[in-house]
Image (tube, rainbow, N blue to C red; front, side):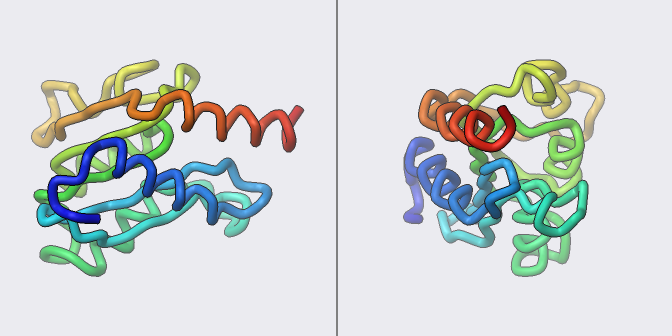
Length: 154
């Protein structure tokens, strides 16, 4: 991705990452870029494939980006693009990793922790609060999830 890519371009890359989710996993994709727009990591949900309840796309991408960037765990200056509003676990990981900016697609009213159910990332008690933009290509991201659940978990 080039520096200065639009939020829509970032979410399109996350949608492409979601395509790599296994057939049993909810198709959520995440991509992390450094401050120059260089892709550091991309991942899709892999909870079912790995039997790991923490294998959300965001966490997997953060782990990979941390291996490739910075001082081993700080992702300062980075942007995370994800197709679905992060849950509390992922929001906590985002804050702890010091990600600068989060862009997400569909809102998640049942478990969302970036404005829907909770607003973890903008809680003033935290020492690190990234910039957040939600609802980018929301309809496209939500449709992919609706289709998955209609076909796999009716």
